[in-house]
Image 1: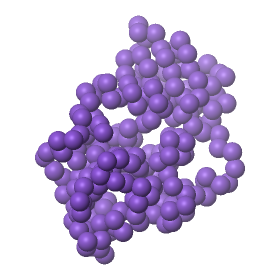
Image 2 (image 1 turned 180 degrees about the vertical axis):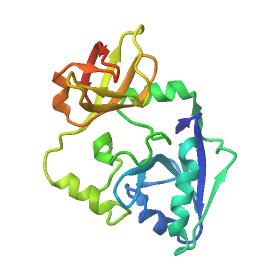
Image 3 (image 1 turned 45 degrees about the vertical axis):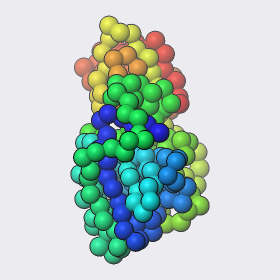
Length: 232
């Protein structure tokens, strides 16, 4: 069981903590155990992702590991609903001994390799789960019942083939494509945004995957020359 060195840990405890989380997270809390982490997300009422995280159960508590930049926002969101349950929420300053902490750069590279966007404050509440392919990575359980944003997300899931999605790219080391930078087609139309990257690999959230057949440009009209770019 491992997490990123950039993660914070949030503890959810109390008599009704499982019931409370089940009504908020996109995955099924009943799949969490003390020896198996579960990847999940939490969304706002419009179905846009606030944070993604890993959950671990330990005795009567749940431990949630998520990027430090969205930890406080995550807690503030949950506190709006926790008043209806016997659930306590707090950010901890220590990690369980059983957790392996992975260097941030290594973690990010591993996430990009598997086509996973580790949500941070720069893009929090900017995308729906489907725009980031979270449904293909089993972060959403469509059989578990209601959760915040579920109606919007389910409608999107069942309405038909989705045009948007992620593209993974590899760029020459002498080139530069910044994280959260927007990309355009030759007509100057915005077609996507870099949602995660290291020096020369990254993920772009595409408005329409058919644009992968076209040339890509920066905002200053400089053409982006990829070594490789493909749909995840």
